[in-house]
Amino acid sequence: MEERGMRHSRRDVLGLLLAGVSGLLVIVALGMVFLYAPREVTMGDVQRIFYFHVASAWVGFFGFFVTFAAGIGYLITARRSWDIVGLSSVEIGLTFIIMTVITGALWAKPVWGTYWTWEPRLTISAVQLLIYVAYGMLRASIESPEREARFAAVYGIVAFVTVPLSWFAIRWWRTIHPDVLTGGEGMAITPRMVQTLLTSIAAFTLVYATLLRQRMRLERSADALTRLQLRVERERSFS
Amino acid sequence: MSFLKKVLAIVEKDIAAELHTKEMVSAMLVFSALALLIFSFALDLRGEVAEAAAPGVLWTTIAFAGTLGLSRSMAREEQSGCIDGLLLAPVDRTAIFFGKVAGNLLFTAVVEAALLPLFSVLFDVALLRPRIFLVLALGTLGYAVVGTLLAAIAVNTRAREVMLPVLLLPLAVPVLIGAVRATGGLVEGATLTEVAGWIRILVVYDLVILAVSLLTFSYIVEE
Image (cartoon, rainbow over all chains, first blue to last red; front, side, top):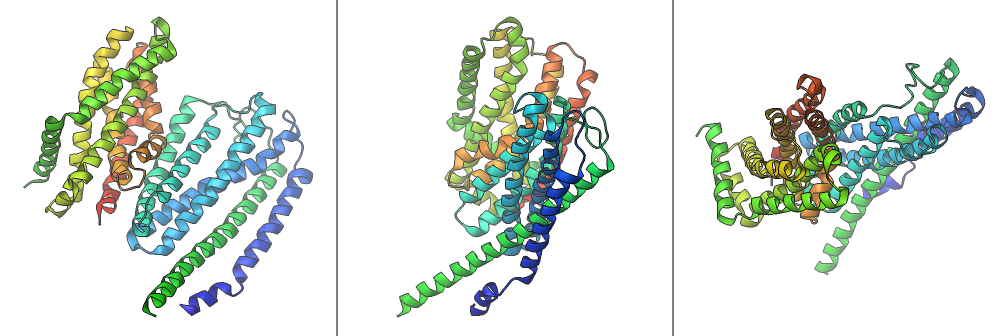
């Protein structure tokens, strides 16, 4: 048990490396968004929020996908490490989905004249937000840790499966989003814009990886602490 | 005992319990009537407004009344200790799941059978058509399947009844959109082929959620 405690206090080289590289890439992406990418013709500078908006939507969805996969992993192996992946990834995914909804609203105001439109991509982000807030509430209201992990895994799987169906249903129901990459209505897309977008997505994905690693370490430390506390209590009750 | 017989035995048990107490269906019925009353105050449901709002009002009422029935049905299993007996019995977990789904479907269908004529009379909207019954059946099936699965989760949490709608409603978004759109189209006199896209969404949802529920249900009840 001491060994485990020691391992956590040692310097986490991969974590530091991830943090450094993702920090650097975020700066590069920021530079590209403001200096490299051209000014969009019809929407003007407002459109620059698009690069981070799309990147955070991607990371949010990806985070929930990881929770889905970790849920399957947990149900098959019943190992705590899969549960830690799942719960950490949901928290980060939620953060990014909140960012998606906020940046979407900020973008919608000058372009469509209103903060909120029931536009499919914005709506599906809001649905995902509510689903994974429910996931958090579910975890918080179960006492047994083993049962919490099991139920959360099942909910993470069932919830993720409904997301594509919700997406199709919502898209059918409303469509006014600029069809960005296929060049439909809305935006004129240039190679520089695509490069900037890809850099932003790469940067945000690395930020996700960094946060995931730290959040998982935190959870493992919390587990180690609980074990130590239990041991202290046991020893005290003997003496 | 064949698989079907086991499923039917569980449904029979639920019907017997319900006939004895009558608490579930009666609560759902009274709640549905109250919901219609509240909606008619809130939206002033007359004439064209009633026809435009009918599908939404109908499905909202079914969804909320459904959560009442679903959580009651699982809470009864827990409180009576009946679920432990079922799990000890030499019965496949999927048989238990199908049995509970069938029971919930049956009780919801009873409520719908009363709700639809009442709705048609009160708001003068022609809902009593075979095409609408098809949409009703598909929508209710998907809702009952995912609802039964999540009710089995919710009943084991501290918040219990409060937890079910929070877990269920965001996952039922495709059913609700599909069912409301299809019903809306049919109320306006569209043919089945004109709303085929929405019906397809309902069918796909039903199949997908049934498959996922069957795969995961045993993990919820394992103890």
